Length: 181
Image 1 (tube, rainbow, N blue to C red):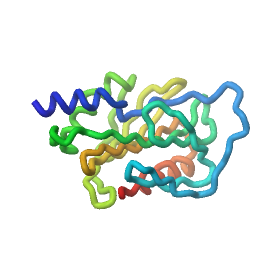
Image 2: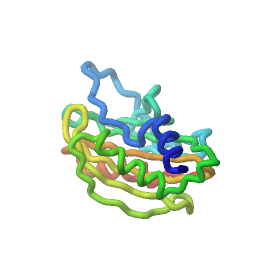
Image 3: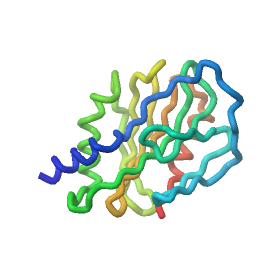
Image 4: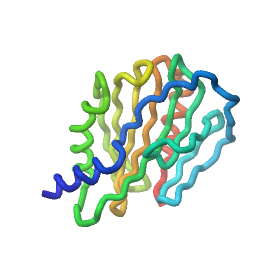
């Protein structure tokens, strides 16, 4: 029963995968930032290097950053935070299983590349890598998700095919910099 309720709770919120975003047709001069630590009132922080531009009003995302256009797409890092009702007694394994079942509905031409158990601020977390079609080309997602105090934190890196290695490494460093408060 709890899995059904957890599924409904997760469906009510945004899915943990943020779709690839196409580059704007007429880009304006991007506002670059120096390396900063973005701290959220929702209980986490991430470090973002210069060259990544903050985006506002990304549906479902607490924070989002983009980088220079690669082909028709821009590398993107997002963090989504979802509160899960305590009475559901959700585990990280429950969230993992539900999201795994939903992925083929959300990601076209999904190819799952791997899963690894990791830690975020001492909390168990799951790191996923997968590829699929974005809006404008093939993309690779790297995603880390963890639960703390009935709150699901999901950080997602989306890289278009052909992203230079140094930029991909910057994106991965943003994900691994996430700390929980």
